[in-house]
Each structure stands twice: as C-alpha cells, then as structure tokens.
Image: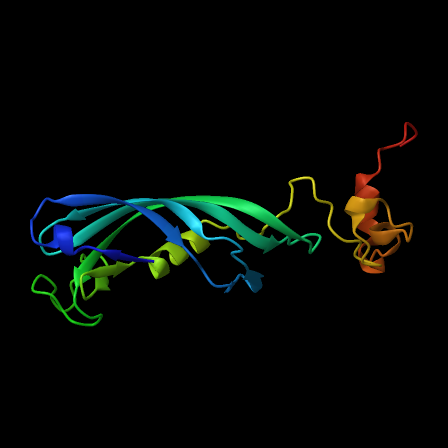
Length: 183
C-alpha cells in the first residue's frame, strides 16, 4: 500500500489522515503457512517531523492459521497498531545523526518519490501479533497420539495414550493413583 506524502512533506508539523487497505501474500511463520484471504483495513495518521515522517496506524483483518493441536485450518481475527518512522532515501545510506557504533539510534524505514510503502512494515507487525502456537480453541483436544484421530470429534477407541505407555515410565503411573485405605 503506497501513500502519497507530497502534500505534507514541505511543511514541518503538517499531517494527514488516510484510510489503509493492505493486501498481503501468504507467508511462513513458525514452520506453518499463514494466509491472508482479505486485505487488512484501517487508518493511518502521518506526521512530518522535519527530517522524518511518523506513521501511526491501526489495522484489522483476519488470518488463516493451522491449529497446532488438531491441524485444522481456522480463521483468527487480528488487530494491530504501530508507529514507524520513515526517512527519505535508500536503505543503507547513513543520515547526519547516525554515527558508527551508536546503538541508541532506532531503526528507520525508508521512502522515495514522495510515496510511503507501508506493506512490509504492516506485514511484520501482523506476524508479530500472531500466537506462537495457534489454537482453534482453548478446548481443542488435538489428535490421538496413537491412531491420529481428531479427538474433538469424539474418542477414538484405540486406547490412545493409556495403552501406549513406555514400560520404563510405567512406575510413574502409580504416583497418580489414590492411596488405598490399607496402605
């Protein structure tokens, strides 16, 4: 999504409000594919700070994820807000206030030809807002470790974890039993 900033670039302190519609391509996140079926929409306010432009944006949309327990696809709503500074020029060009080894300088995005492209910045913030282990619901029971049946659809009948206990760990099973009145 490109935003024309020619109208605010000339006067320090000027700003503009614009609607956003950011279309994103599928991405890999945490070893799984993340799909964006519809564009993220929202609003952005852009401020001229003199040598930089500040973008304050809010976006809402939906993401198609794969549940980490049952492996079903589901749609999760995502809402993000972020601030990002843009400086005119090309990445890698050092500005007058950046010195070698100065780690206090915050990273800045770049723009050229009087247009800001917020697509990559928005994509990064949306991916950061996603859960590390996506779940279709908190109550998801996942798959049977023995036969692979989706336990959300009901019990599998194979005995699952109960019959598939490592014999070396069978002694630990006794710890979960309630003590008899005779012991």
